[in-house]
Image (cartoon, rainbow, N blue to C red; front, side, top):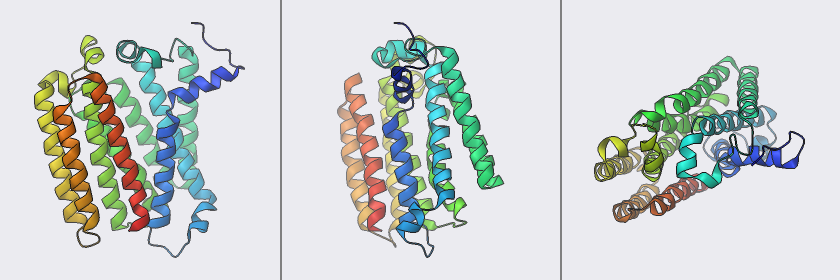
Length: 286
């Protein structure tokens, strides 16, 4: 297949395919809901929606996340030809040169916007961009470290909201921990899904290093720690949410225990994304 011309609509469609528009929409919605419902300031939802600075913050977060997806696809092209051949864009629909141009442009713009807002946000954006590059280049090939990096960066997207509003809201921390834990579980499940291609190209993810059964037991431990942590942090605020989360995690563990195919692991990854989305929606009821 020939790569698309720069001026063709397919060129931009291929970029959209790489950056996972749905995932980016969830990131943006999460930051806006965090600002509206969790930040303890005397502002209504209209103030947040019309805050130009906050719009720039969300935009910079989305740009850096987009660049992260792009560079991940760039480094994983051989692996993706094994695991997800129908979703490969790099070198197939877009030239490697244009992929790197897009990655560099989005990172530089996201970092520049961060420094425009404040030096601290600029530094956070810089290290987030660097962390995503390092993850794609090296860390994802190591057991657990890559998974933890993505989980930490996901949590950071919520903490950035508190930084922008100069608000260290306890609820923001609670939801950041929630986002980090569920992302960690999802990343390990994705490693189980991608085991075949990862193993062929020498990655040392948890499923490859430990095997599937031991990796599943590790996920159970994470889920248990997740439930206990959320219960301890939120029981005085809302006892309902920790209980609902515990029930959801219980059924997720049962599903993980019964899953043993690539298709099943793919469904579990989607379930984790749905849990994340439900968690975001729950901000409305706090």
